[in-house]
Length: 383
Image 1 (tube, rainbow, N blue to C red):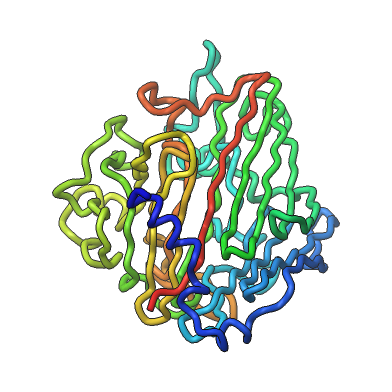
Image 2 (cartoon, rainbow, N blue to C red; image 1 turned 120 degrees about the vertical axis):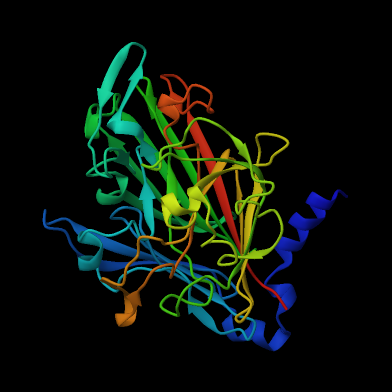
C-alpha cells in the first residue's frame, strides 16, 4: 500500500474511528432525506429545503434555489454537532447581495478577464460584475436560479439531484447547456458532488461549490488558527484585478507553500505582493496529481473542536479563499456578524480565466461530449 493509499484509507475511517462507542450512539440513526417549504421567490415560485442525514448524525441542508448549502452539521471530538458553514436563517438573506454563501456556481466559476472571450472566431461579451471582470457566471449565475430537485435514497447514500437548463445566450454564454448536479451524503461521512453537463454549441464551463467553512462553528470568530494543508506544488499568481497572469509558479519559498500543515493565519499578512493584492489568500492552487481521477486536494483541522475536512476532486485546481472581503456588514445565522476571515472556501475548479489563457487546461465543452466533475468532502475528528 502506498502512502497516498494509506492516507486515503485513514480518511475514510474518521470520524468514527476517533469517537467512543457511546458518542457514536448519541448521533446514530437511519439515513434520511426530507423536503419542506423554505419560502417564496419574488416570481411566486416556491423554494424547498432538503435535509440529508446519515447514520452518524451528520446533516446537510440545501435548497433548490441556487443549489445553496445552507447548513452542514458535523460532530466535534465530544460528539457535539455544530454548523460549519456560513449563511442565513431564511430565504430573504440569500435573495440580497451575498458573497456566494453555499452557492452552486456557474456557468463559469471564478473570474473571466474584462468579461469577454473568443471561441471559434466569435467574441462573446459577459456581464461585468467584479471590477472590470466577470465573476461566478455574471449578474444571474446558477446561484440565483431555481433548480428542479429530486431527492433520492439508495445504496450510494441519500441526496438530491438538481437539474437546470441554461438557455443559449444566458448571461452572454453560447449554447443551451443542460446541467445536472447531484449532492450525496453517505454513511462513510462523505459528501459528494457530481457535476454533469451537455451543450448544443461550444461553450466554456466551470462549476464549483462556494461554501464558506468554519470548522469551529459558523459565527465563532475567524479561521486563522485552523490548520490547512494543500497538495499543490504550484499556484497561479494574479494581477491587480485578480486575473491570473498565465504563469504557473512554484509555491516553494513563498507564503503559498501549504504542502505541510500550517495555520491559515501564519503567513496571511506577510509583505507579499500576491497576498496584498487579494487581502489574503484568494488564489488558485494547481493540485498535484498522478492521473485524472480523484486526487486529494486539501485538509483542514480545527485544533479546539477537533473537526477535520478533507477535499478530493477530479478538478485540476482549488481556489483557496480566506473571506478577505467579509467586513462585518453581514448578519448571518443566529444574528452572527461575519467579520473578515470568519470563513474559508476551497472551491474545486478549472483555472480562472481559462477561456483567455491557452496554456491552461481547457474548459470548452463541445456538442456530443459530456462534462463530468466530482468533488468529495470527508468529515472527521482528530484526537
